Amino acid sequence: MPGFGHIGKILILTGLLFVIAGLIFVFGSKYLPLGRLPGDISIRRGNFSFFFPAATCIVISLLLSLLLNIFFRR
Picture 1 (tube, rainbow, N blue to C red):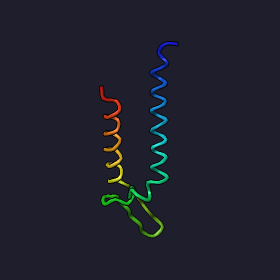
Picture 2 (cartoon, helix red, strand yellow):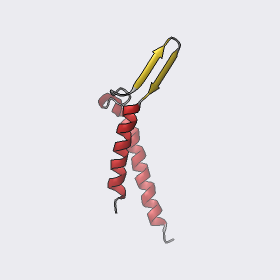
Picture 3 (cartoon, rainbow, N blue to C red):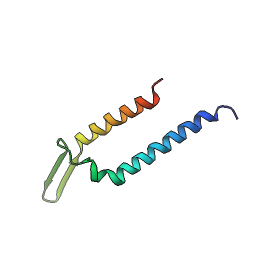
Picture 4 (tube, one colour):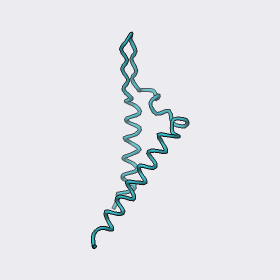
């Protein structure tokens, strides 16, 4: 059927992105200090703990923006 080639490319690209994300989660903690960057907020007091990875969110956002601009640039 015509028109399904484009959907196939999107599915392959999505699958590759999931594989790359999985590899980053499995092996990235050894090489990337995500979650422990300067600028990540961590508060511990008694029975209360709060963690917000602000710097990590910014780094991930920049990387995703860069990758998506590379892949979807026309």
